[in-house]
Length: 350
Image 1 (spheres, one colour):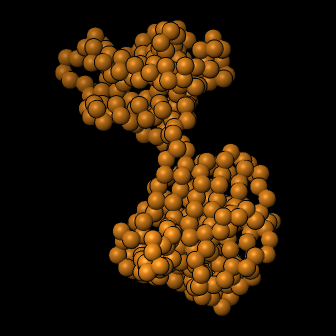
Image 2 (tube, one colour):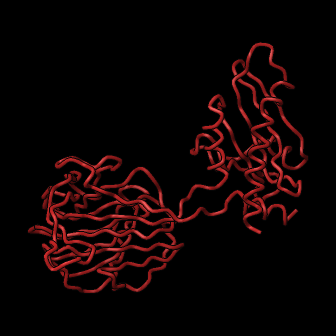
Image 3 (spheres, helix red, strand yellow):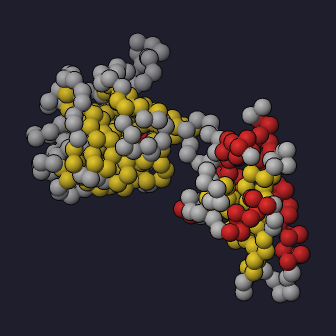
């Protein structure tokens, strides 16, 4: 049984291949706030003024001829508010996804500021008061990493470094498990940091006080957090649009405990299952349920050796006169297709 449980973990929680996402501000109009981002603030004062502006940006590619222009006018992201309040940290958080392991890179330029001239990246953001940040200061000539917990700034780590204002620089953060690497212009100026406070979270752009800073060429290469079981559920919901819900439960490490690992509503995942799911996995029985508008069929999901690795609940709209037998007939093709998908994943691991 221990071997079967291991297979269930491997197959249903197999990491997905690396993905890349680029943030192209050239697709936006000048003075437009970027969609899918949330403007907020840590500390005192109001959120920043984040908009797209046009600026001269040096090319990332080497010139193909001496006559080729070294810079081009392009759309970049800018934080334009100049609030001199101390302990004022404008944040622009990408709200569309959560990231665990990744490499995040952006180019930045500090433009002006009397109190501060800073630009940075916030990452593994839980909310505006809990996250990691790495930032560069042109006034202080420092490159620093620190952690924010419940709004309190932790120990600053990092060296002094010349970071001229008005010049484009490159900032990179690499996260893998509990290890964090921070690079400035391709150089790792801060020793690798080990910290377990935040294992995943949002990403965002960061400034301080009255800093006016620009960002361009932002991109992230990451390992998606979605489990294969969730991807299968999503695909099945698209293929069978009349389904009301589709859920996958797995046995936990504690005897008699099951957990929801995939569902139409991803926010439901992680909650414990009930007696029906326990019986389906432990004894291979099936369950049928019905209310005024729907029916559900819960049956075992088996690997290619015939061993039960999960319980699947198929919820469908009911029709007048529907019986348990007819509900099972309707659910069977869906269950067979899911089982085939899981078994093919097993074969890929061989």
